[in-house]
Length: 273
Length: 247
Image 1: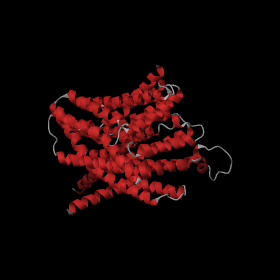
Image 2: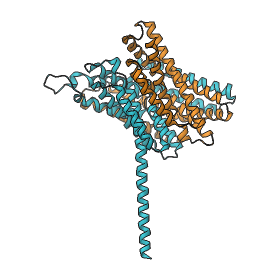
Image 3: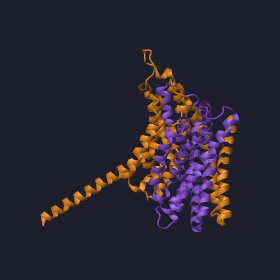
Image 4: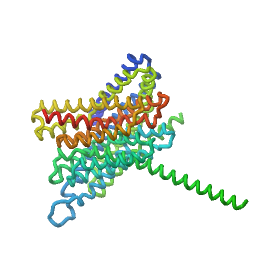
């Protein structure tokens, strides 16, 4: 009964989020472009699928995954769990939090893979690039970036190092990479930061950050709890640029290999003649 | 009929593969690291089924509606040749989708508490509510502006790299002078603005414009709107925080 109530509420809320956008687009179509929409029935069916799908997705996440994720973030950052097996009475240091880093890596990776917005952009990118950018390659590259970002962000909260120093260093790396990266990938790589932090990642990652900032001595959840999203947003840019660079390098190697083979073949054919 | 069935099975299997990592990670940590029994297996399974069906339907609806209407609109606007209406559309698409974004509202609420504690605003309900509204309007306005800049970039073929590097430099410079308590929020606000419904529409808008212009490449010119929409809020929020503290 409870599930039905929250279910209907979530569906209505999703419809409420999507409706203004739809009205705006339809208004534009009718009043500015003054052309009827093509395939009205198809579009309506698609919109219904989008709303119901997103609604069900959110119900499932909010009912089960998010509470569980928050609970686990709390348990993992609990001082009792952190200090188990440590017999000497001392304050926790950053190396005691190893399971937090592993969890941050794993949850960052898996939420990015499940992110519908990332899948949407990856599908589009693969379509326009004619398949030279693979959907899975891009998603895995972004997910690795989110994983590194979230665990580095946890390290920052635990050690209390300044946020802007990390972000600054990240930007410098991005700028340097941009100079060498294949031109085709750069806009997509910049986009992948914003895309990766959406419906699934933001709530779980925020819970982890707040849990850490609450339990680590000397941290304030209000000041230190922020910043994880920024990390999860920045590092995918670095990994996607790196993915493209690796692709370009291996392509060059292959081309060099082909040339060598050709030259060898030519020289043997010369010797034979 | 058989084809449709196969298609459905394939897309459900695809969604299952996308979601498997989350369930594996949570299950693994619950059993082996925290060593706690998983409370309510049945509700977990029910939740998993909901998420699975939901993701499958969403992706299906994306291909059927969101991508086509976004691109069709971009095409028609570009063919109409009216830069004015294109920019109006871009601005309100950014502003409208951001102001209603639930993640932004949540972050803005937390931010108002930080500001109240830091003494930047009075610690009363009205002052905090005004701060939340101000922050939401600031971010929504910045996303609208970002889309205008992004569309102009596609139209005139400006270099995205230069805009982004310039923007980052501005962010770094502003970090040095902005009040400490607003910096973390400003950095995060870039990430929370781009939601699941906005991203496909904005991507379709950029790609639609780039492919309807003759000498633009959808790959290098079509992408980049989302990047600007995540960069601009950082600049605007730091300016807003500085302004509030200064007043």
